[in-house]
Image (cartoon, rainbow, N blue to C red; front, side):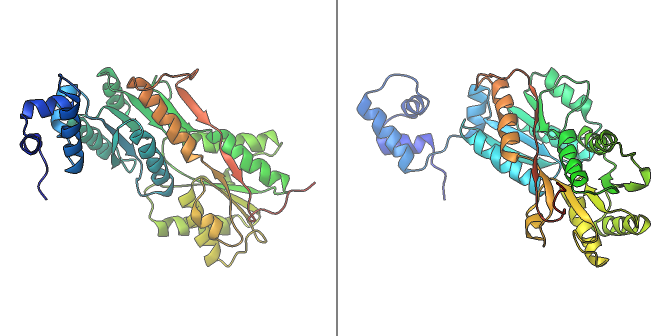
Length: 340
């Protein structure tokens, strides 16, 4: 189907392309009757302005670049949906990219979005991209970091309170009487993973329980699902006295459930399970897995508000542009009831 043009509308309404252009862009003076006729024709024929031309004229593309770890993941997928909804309210579209926590790919995505002249960026940080992000800031491009941040760099960010989210889960386990709590994480050099491990360690100390390095398993981020399952299986076999296990991410939790199933372990009879970051699998898996839920709607709204403020589309009433949002403990039946 041929795309309708300004010349087509001019021909249909018996006017000049200049007059049509003025009316569609709210400029110039025409009679009310002619204005209504042109607008009605444009709407009926499904006229869409040429985005490149609009960008050249206004200096704005009305596009926001979004770079996340994995657009196909449940957490980032939910965030993207909320961000798109918020952006649409202000006439913005979103271009989605995945970095897969790879420096080279992250740089490629930034260059791709720069070529498209996006108006601003929302980025989930990858270790090693600090200089690239700072170049965007230096060029006066609005940037908001989401799900993590670069310590020491003055860049607006939004993420969940990882430390206290983990603390809630460990407190819950200890309150239910568990004493030997294992922790499974990955070797990504990002602040949120460091805060999750720190939350585990410090909460044990708070309860006068000495952290045991043998009860911490750190898997390679680039491990396959099978490698993660095998690694967790070996970890459980080596720690026979472990009565609970806390997974630092939902994909680790899912791999952990596969390990426990292969080993014929019953949850929570043989071992309790808690996972950071909720996933639909955890509510479907019998008996239901206790999780630390990241409030995607609040995170997305806060990130978009910070970006729109930089773009001059919203007035900020925030005290800070560095935001940590509380996580939610979702209690299910993978942990025995807390002792009174």
